[in-house]
Length: 119
Length: 113
Image 1 (spheres, rainbow over the protein chains, first blue to last red):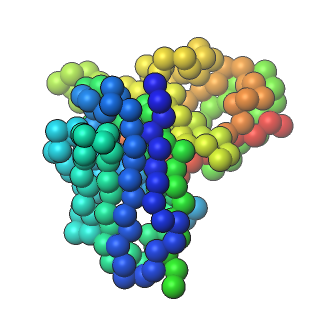
Image 2: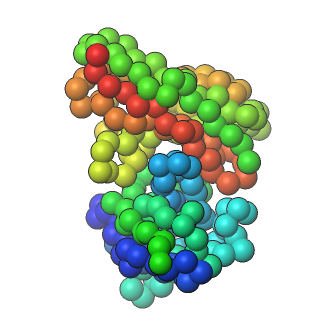
């Protein structure tokens, strides 16, 4: 199994939109829920939301007003968009695959990408 | 949201000894309809993402050594490492997936004494 790979800008200005991409292998995308999870020293691990390979998604209510997730099956990529960011959104962002048949048990993680929100 | 609280925050155990990490949920995370406890445990080493160890409170993920075991029910759970190895130095997290957004404990740092 090929590990997912997150990518995106490491620095985002306050009030702007954070956009990240996760590239996964075609075989591992199908039939699984995929989540974005972030980690900060202060709040620890925080689940942002998941998207199924069909496009169905669900977000953490605490972030739902600012989050959009999408999937592009032609390129095997998942995307995360978080708008109106503040310094509190500074974190390491992971994409993670859920075990088959489950939404939220994560058996495969990307290495993570560090995003800093700063002017 | 269900709050997950781990104890202790850090733990030092001698090589070959048993390590025990506790996790408490603010609500019952057991479903009697399927007799399952919706709890997972992860291990995170420096510079790496978390690694799944256990789910359904006690089912080991493929490839996880059998010195790792999980127990508990209702709202109180335990991760045990029967004979601590040097490679087990890490931060350990519990996570509930019973209801609402998935939530994680704050982590327990395990070191060698």
